[in-house]
Image 1 (cartoon, rainbow, N blue to C red):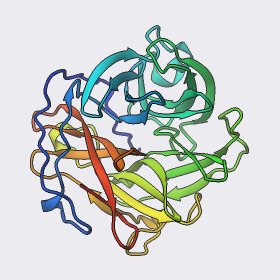
Image 2: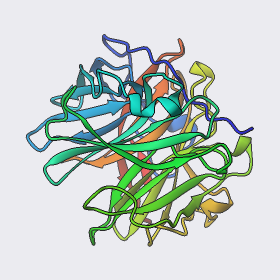
Image 3: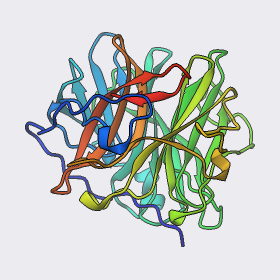
Length: 327
């Protein structure tokens, strides 16, 4: 059986994260020149992080954890614990989590005057999984209302309904990408008025055929005339032994076909590496991207040499051919 290597228990580390600016990334940089995460302080323990800029200023971060872990920051540098989205439990997800309160890989965004969050419920190594949608006008702990199930997978689906990401096109279409191992990454169209599925079509957008078919955590980001598919290859959740790395491909159409820099289709295992383990930074992955006032920002987690999961933040540059690089 293919496995989903997702941690079921997170340890939040409070205090100064010993991270340095590192070497500035350049287009086509090799692993030896990948930058270290930028400096973040305060509450820096995070797994599968996603971040949104708040309309009134500052940032809201959500991550895997019991009831979904929330953090806030005024400056994208110092982060403070902000409780849980669902402090009173999520009984509606118990059939997928086996009764655990641990919910995975939230995707947070702001639309129509409220925060929206897609998140996954599953258990380690299982494809009996579901993606749910919740909303909150403030984003604060305990204010989130669950709107119900969006999509589910079963033990016989051949794909896994976890790691959701919402992308809204310039024309106003809503699309949800998701997936992990098994037959790879998928995408479905959503109804913008409900945030739920618009039809029954499932689009295949990426698949691997080596390393246990390890591709997951899709994030689709629009830049220029392309949709960029960021994703994670290889294995998460093994502490300092994690081999997660951030890959990218692009397409002029949101449903693909996506190709990497060499022209290989993502449905044939393609993907261009832009960040991987280096020095004391182990297994950087589960990418999320948003546009800020100074640059496009890459958010991810990585492991320290002691095996702790930490928040990673870098900026993204774009080379003359329109491909992203991390700096």
